[in-house]
Length: 146
Image (cartoon, rainbow, N blue to C red; front, side, top):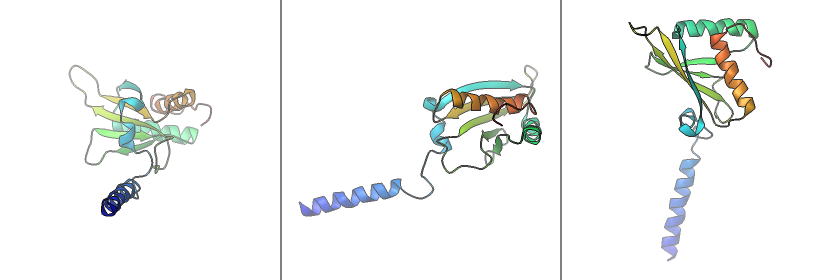
């Protein structure tokens, strides 16, 4: 019985140590990409990643801040916007937007799909989402709080 209790204790300690492994603490982007944390989705026409980045640079120059644009590794049509200038350790209090760039076709202009996620949702988060989208759609038009 003592050996059984000892083994269960070792297994429990191993599981807890695995949960506390460095680099895995806090809320990560993949944790946000869940329907539970989905906020909104929109498509912005006549936009591609180079023009989107140009809009963000203009917005940062005029307003002092803009979301951070991050390309997904080995993906030319996928990127993310993070509302903070630095990549955070935990995304618990960060608004994240995933972007998909679609090329121009005979039936549709070039466009970017935006899917926004947040661990929490309230009026303050909605204002932050609106500011992120505003930086893309209306670069240089500064909102209060920027």
